[in-house]
Each structure stands twice: as C-alpha cells, then as structure tokens.
Image (cartoon, rainbow, N blue to C red; front, top):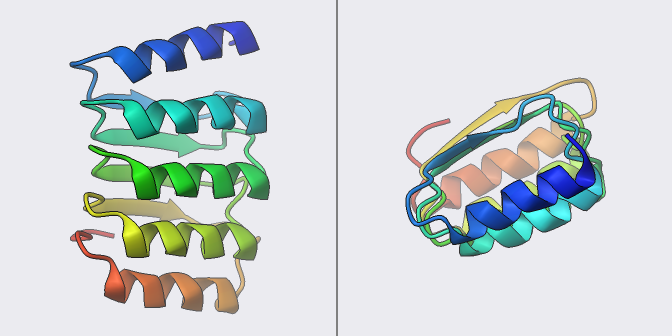
Length: 135
C-alpha cells in the first residue's frame, strides 16, 4: 500500500463510528505510517483491536505507537511482533501498559531484539497495568 493509501485508510479509521478491528500484518506501515496511524488510534471512537506484525516499524515507531496506546479511548487488544520490539521499544510499551485505562489484552511475539532487561521492564509494567487481563 502506498503512503497515500495508508493515510486515507488511517484517516477513515479516525472517523469511523463502527470499525472495531484492523490488521496490518506485514503491511509496510513504517515510521511515517505509524505516526499517522497513532494519531488515528487516539481518536478512533470504536477501534477495540489492532494487529501489527512485521510492519516495518523501528524503535521510534514503537514509541509513537506506545503513546497512542496510552491515550486511546477504546483500544482493548493489541498484537505486536518483530520490528521495533527491542529493549527501547519495550520500555515505551511498558509506559503505555502502566497508563492505559482500557487495554485488556496484549500479545507479543518477541524476536532476538529483546533482552532479559527488556522483558523485566515489561513484566513489571504488567503487574501494574490497570485493565490488563490477558497476555
């Protein structure tokens, strides 16, 4: 999908009163797309679930996404794998977990970029996540 196409989809997501789930696996979202997607996630009134696996997102993209997760009004479930799942990405994600009042489920498919320290940070955040029910 081109940048223009992604931007159009993400803008529609932002204003859709009924779209509840989006899957962008191996979609080549990248950091620029993640910036637009994250803004849409914050404002999507009905988006409850998102799946982003192998989407070409760096640590920066993970930080942007994590801020959106923290601020999202409806997002209850997220699946992440590959790409920006490094120790820095896990640090950003842990902050989102601690502060998201609605996120109930997270699925992480980790690769070699996450060390024991990265997992320790996420594990600690999971203990204090206000709504998290499933990992």
